Image 1 (cartoon, rainbow, N blue to C red):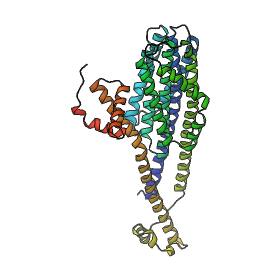
Image 2 (cartoon, rainbow, N blue to C red; image 1 turned 135 degrees about the vertical axis):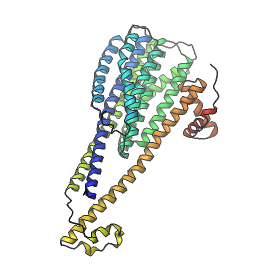
Image 3 (cartoon, one colour; image 1 turned 30 degrees about the horizontal axis):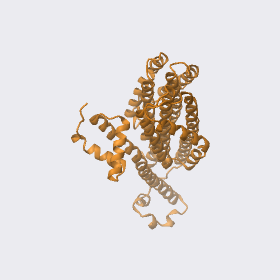
Image 4 (cartoon, rainbow, N blue to C red; image 1 turned 180 degrees about the vertical axis):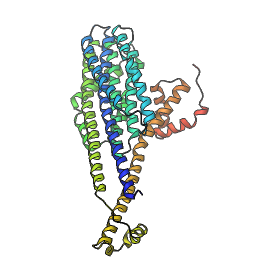
Amino acid sequence: MKSGLHFLVAAKRCEIAELQQLALTSALVNVTGRLVHSLQRERGLSNLFLGSQGVQFGEVRRHQIAESRQIEAELRTCFDELDTESARLDNGARLFSRIAYVLHGLDALDGLRARVQALEWTPQQATEAYVRLISGLLAVVFEAADSASDPEISRLLVALFNFMQGKEFAGQERAAGSALFAGGRAAAEEQQRLLHLIESQERCLEVFAEFSNPHAVELWNTTQASAMLAELERLRRVLCTAPHGSPLNAQVSQAWFDCCSRRIDRMKAVEDRLALDLLQTCELKIEAAKLELNSFHALHTAPATETDVLSFFRAPETRSTAAFATGAQGYGLHLERSILELVQAQARRLQTMSDELDTVRASLNERKLIERAKGLLMAHRHLSEEEAHKTMRQMAMNQNRRLIEVAEAVLAMADVLPERPR
């Protein structure tokens, strides 16, 4: 007959298996972040290439494409190493669906590049295509964060996801500004898009700071050189305050791209630190769990007496210390009590982890609700993503409510929302 110790060992083995799965997922997130970074740079260079009508940036763009292809091959290898047969992954259905979507986009990526090379697409079309693929890759990271069963690892994943999302908004800002400068003329719609992207960056970085460890936040703060930020703000003002249709100096496009790139490269250094912290945390937790498992194996209980069995029902403070005297009976009771206390400690730890996970996942759930509400407004009122978000933000300000509360109200009114005619 299997003992309580047998099931305690089984529970610890399950915990180790979950941590090992999280380690694999963390490695996947790491490679995904590298590919996102490479595609962000490729997107910006493609916009410069298109904006100059293919006259400039062709060679550097080709080198960037070669780098993206190399990292893509690594990511595909990571996908191949995922266990898709046993169905043991908690969030497997959503994660695997996201990966299937991303693979479809990666398969079509060379077609996108060919159209950019042939100058068949506008910078806006190319940007939207890259944004769609990068959003799919970030959704893989989001599902990885949502599937984490360890609260510390979950917090790190949430911090990493939001930092990566903030960096993606910074990359979109670089691409949009590159297209404006290279095109040589201000456009009100693109200026509004830039303002939305700047605000979105700040929102993501606030969540990152909330869930990250203090060392990563300090690293991010110290990498923000004042001179670089001053130059970025100056160029932002040039782009965002120029009257619609007024000329822009196309020669500044390279300066804009380089300034944004320096900031994004520094963000990548912080992202790398977050990814390393994540992997190291997984490794440390796996090692600690294995040591604990070995200590379980060292326990061998003597046959339980009636006194041993009844110790289960005694409150800890009423147990007699005399029961732990030397001798066979006392030794057996000591071991029985050790196992019982291990079980109780495990239960308390799991409950604490569950409570902490609820706190972390609340942030992820808020994001899900806000995205669903934006999607609903986009569908019913034929708004762009920026317009939907601006509408919800204005509602929150007017009603003095949090954005998540507005999102919940929008979703609650789903069936009665009026549809604006096209």
